[in-house]
Image 1 (cartoon, each protein chain N blue to C red):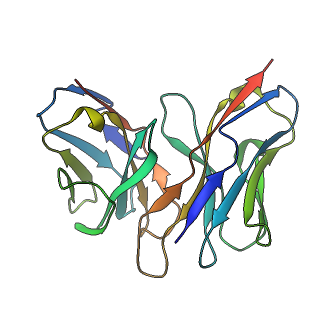
Image 2 (image 1 turned 45 degrees about the vertical axis):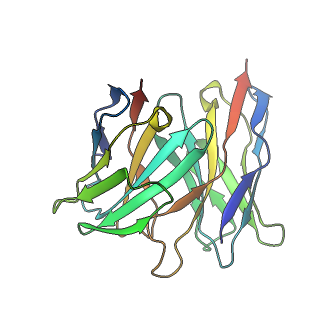
Length: 117
Length: 112
């Protein structure tokens, strides 16, 4: 079975400093992993996805994530935080295996990113 | 392409009533998944529809049901509403249910 654990429920950074949001996953096969962002009262926006093509994945708005199989981690980083990055971030694993469990994503509990001026 | 749309955006109902939520997927996407988001339980998978058939279902009671039409639009119905059904309901679409899902803005349901 697949699962994801976001190691921090809340992260606070100053504007212009690096961002690190941590995620560990568990999967019995090669996973598809995603990071989504949710701004207040909005839906989920895809930041980036890993599907085994490359371990370092670049996403939108300067975010990137590195897949580390040995550590079962998929941490999200950004070199310099912007005020507009303040939101909730979800690490997500696809539950799809072959033709079964279609359409199902499994979400971490979310990390709230606060950016201080 | 237009994104995923959901209507209505907000709903207020009372206990015991029923509610229907609508989701229009991205053009060309045939899979629609539904999720419930609450502060306590986070984001949980409700069900997935593809070609008018429910292919996958999460661990929710039978009061939660859905359907999909031939144009891939989907509706979700909750009968006999309970206070605990208050949540943000999100739908997402993908090409076939195995790829990246794109989310709509959600419908916020408040049950009084």
